[in-house]
Image (cartoon, rainbow, N blue to C red; front, top):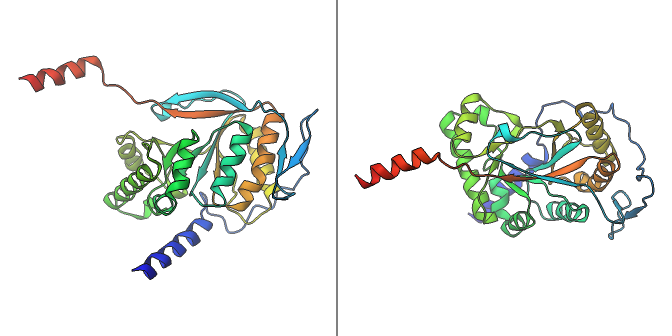
Amino acid sequence: MYRFFVLSCIALAAALSGCSTTKQSSPDTSIKTSSVIAPEGRKLAYSADGDAAAPLLAGPHHLAGRTLEISSLADLKLHDKEVILSFDDGPVPGRTDKVLAILDQFGVKGAFMMVGQMAEMHPALARKVAMDGNAIGSHTYRHANLSALSFDAAMAEVTKGEMAVTKATGTDVAFFRFPYLAESHRLRAAIAMRDLVVMDVDIDSKDYFTTTPASVMQRTMNLLHKRGSGIILMHDIHKRTATMLPTLLSKLEGEGYKVLTLKFRKTQAPSNLVASADFVMTR
């Protein structure tokens, strides 16, 4: 039984390491790497572990934007130069905790779409993500391609993943993202009926490609410049993501972007429906 569990963990880690939202045969090499430039009047420091590829911007930060409370995807409306940072596939020790530390240094929050099995394997880390004030979402139980499953099997994956993340984090799951962004109208509707907000993607960092952290950062900024705002997709299971994140946040801050904090707002039933229900209960 133990051997089976270990083999399952290895298989899951291998699957997640190759996770992508869009299938592509090879990494995008069109983006050229660029040197890190600090905003005017600011100096770049470096991480305590001596990783010169992970610059940290010294001094107070002004990157945090407003808190956006939503109850459905229709409420998720961003202004120009507003972004939401989202991270899929974790939690993973040594990666997710570094991402959390960087977010804390810059005074911003993210939205973490956790795989149920990963949350089960690392409940303490999953709980820390929630306790730090980040938005919590699920990403199915085993990162399954839901479009390849029957409707019932797909919903079972969604439900099991949601329950696993809820148990690990100790908080209600409010958001959901389709693995590989493989969805259907029927699944979206069914997931919405579970009071989950489906998180779409506006800017795909493609940090799952085997490429340099600088390339990931530059690709993300190039896409953001074209859109002006949006939900950025990253993965907290990759070292290159934690390495490039301080530079990305420094660039965002230097160019006047704001990182929003995402909160779920529960919808309340109309008073007439509540009154009708009370009337039925008392008859």
